[in-house]
Image 1 (cartoon, rainbow, N blue to C red):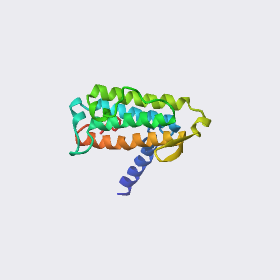
Image 2 (cartoon, rainbow, N blue to C red; image 1 turned 90 degrees about the vertical axis):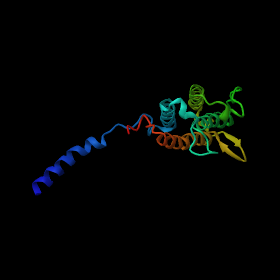
Image 3 (cartoon, helix red, strand yellow; image 1 turned 120 degrees about the horizontal axis):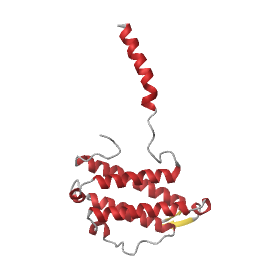
Image 4 (cartoon, helix red, strand yellow; image 1 turned 180 degrees about the horizontal axis):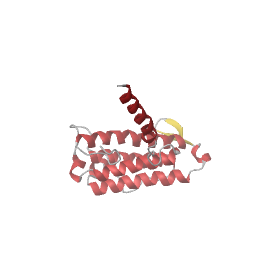
Length: 176
């Protein structure tokens, strides 16, 4: 009995470094730009893995559909970014969250919004990030706006993973 226990312990000890040596996903622990790259890649991968007919799916009446969640992210990215200076795209209308529903159009807007945030943030200097802006009913900094953008994107990523799982769609990065 002790021999079997000793063999199991040896196997566990020699396997542990391999288990913990897995490579972290790209962007993780690499500051804002790395984290933005990570969430952007996941959002796009999940959108592209979702069949077109599932973009109209919603978990219950009165709740955003899959396409509406993606468009909400895109619109929020542009709007929050506009507080820091860049203009909202003129062709993005007030009803776009509900009006833009095809997978191709939704994914295009999502990618465009993610790239706009990436490009704008890369152009910011440390001094720019400390600049004061006014949003809704309070003052904030440009850095605070970028924090809100990334938190918002990750919040809805979780929602979209739940939507996907409810529809039998496996997030491409999860493996199961």
